[in-house]
Image 1 (cartoon, rainbow, N blue to C red):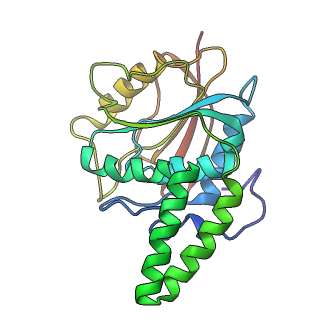
Image 2 (cartoon, rainbow, N blue to C red; image 1 turned 90 degrees about the horizontal axis):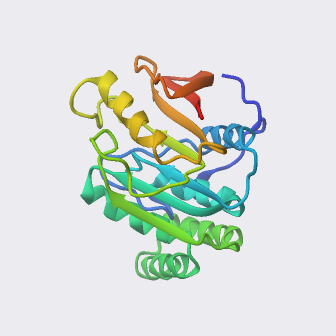
Length: 238
C-alpha cells in the first residue's frame, strides 16, 4: 500500500503491547502507523471531527482503541469497546484506563516499583514511555467503556450516535468467530448500522483478504491492502 497521510515512518514503541499498554493473552497488537493512516482517512470522511464517538466492536485487549485514544483524543468525547471474550475485556478496561490521569499514574507507579526491584532496562524504557504518554494525556475523554457483547449476534450494541467504527476482525490462527464467515460480517454490519449517526459516520473494517465486507445498508467508498490485511471503508446510506 501507499501511505497517504502517515508518510514518515516514526517510532511508535511507546505503544508497543506489553510496554505501557497491557498485553492481553492470545491477542495481537495493531500496527500504530497503519492505525493512524486508517484514522486519518476516517476523519476526512466526516462532516465534523470534534466530540466524536468511537467504537471498536471486536476490541480484544483494546490495544487499538488505546493508542488511537492517545493520538487522537482531541477528536473524541466517548470511546467504547466490546468483545465476546469477557476475560480479555479485563485487559481492555485496564488499557482504556490509561487514557485517564489516574490510570496512567497508577501504571507509572507500578512500573517504577518493578524497576526498583528488578532493575530491568525494559522497565526503564517503559517509564520513559509513560512520561511521553503523560504529555499526550492532557485532554480528557468524557466516557471510556468496555462491555461484553457479541457484535455478530441478534441484538444491537447498547450505544448510539457512533461516528467512527474502527475494528480489526478476528482472523488467522489466533482467534476466529464461529459460524459462517460471510454471515457474521453481514450481521455485524446490520447491528452497526442501527447505532450510527447516519449523517456523520464512517466504518473502517480490517480483515483477512478472503473475507467479504459488503452490506446493503452501506456504500463501499474505499479499500486497500496492507500485507495480509484488507481495509475497507463504508459509509451508511441514509
